[in-house]
Length: 126
Image 1: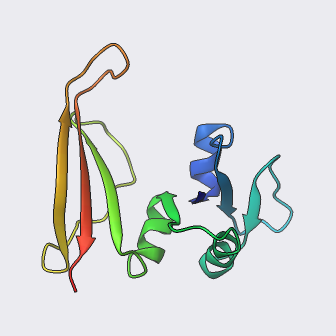
Image 2: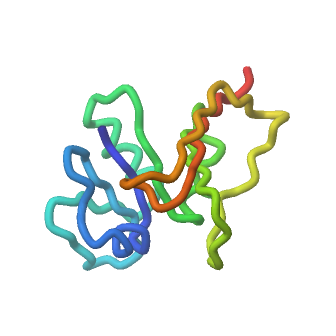
């Protein structure tokens, strides 16, 4: 399963996501990371992901990558964490005229999760 992300998102994780094909989009010509593929634009990243012969390609951030690919997506897997945290990047508002929420599962905070969260799946309307 390919995951596409921006370089800042990759840097914030500090490592690749195991068990996945990690594709990092960066404008830095000489940037490299062990075990990650590098692309310099969204189209190249998607082409690399398609070469993996997969059923789904996952775009995992950051904000610019979400904005650049929002018209390409057919499904959104969204996790809403139930806490307000200061930040400078936000997921774009979902236009309910174009998208339909098809599932929603609430999870309480527990020993593995510091905050309660809701996992949502949205499908693009036909």
